[in-house]
Amino acid sequence: MHAIERHDGTEEHYESAGSRHLDPLWRLLRDIERLHASGWRLPRARERRTARRERPVSESRTELFHLGRMALGLTAVDAAALMGASRRTSQRWSAGRTSPDALSLHRLAVAVLPKDPKLAERIHAHAARGAAKAGLPLPPLAPPEGATPDPHAVDTILCAAADAMNLAPRAVRPGLLAALLRAKEVSMGVETMIMALRAGRRAKG
Image (cartoon, rainbow, N blue to C red; front, side, top):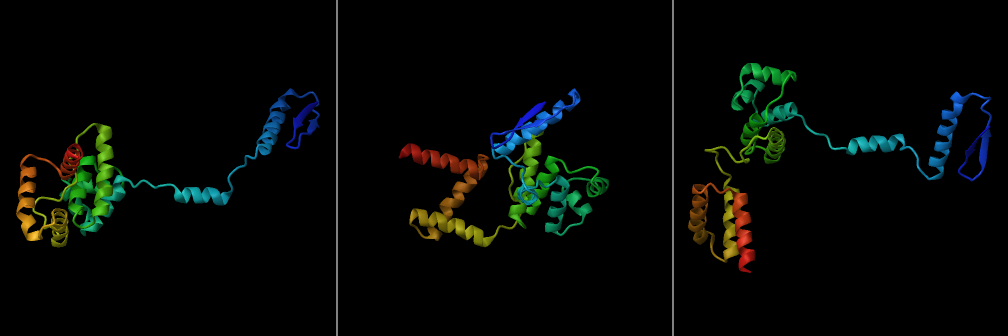
């Protein structure tokens, strides 16, 4: 005789008929009763579907390659050439047999940056993760040499400096240009400059 404790405190008895191989079944039923009594339940189908939809989807290197080349308006062969790869390699990428390495993705991100900065950041982030796993250094994401800057963006930077210094933009331009040229000479990136200037301001204050 086997007894299972129900959620209401009563016991339900089962006759095993002397078959020991049925004992696991009684234990399973007992555990189910206890889980039910504790309030636990399986997630419903709708909840499982919602969880799957809300789960972040990681883009593959091949997907990012095609998104990048479409943003640039290039064929797979031309995009691969831009990334330093051969026609045969581009065919393997397109067929999904291989995928671009971290450095190739970085080159694509740099090319995409003027067209679609958000997509460029996604491509570069994927490349950075791959480079970190391989223990390889990866250059920062920066516009390609010779790229035409956005005049509006330059004006907003100049006006921000002028507002902070309470000066006219024309008066700020020479000083700002001199500072940026010096930063380039010493190979200091924008993020490093920001950190250093903020640290200096806190120390002075």
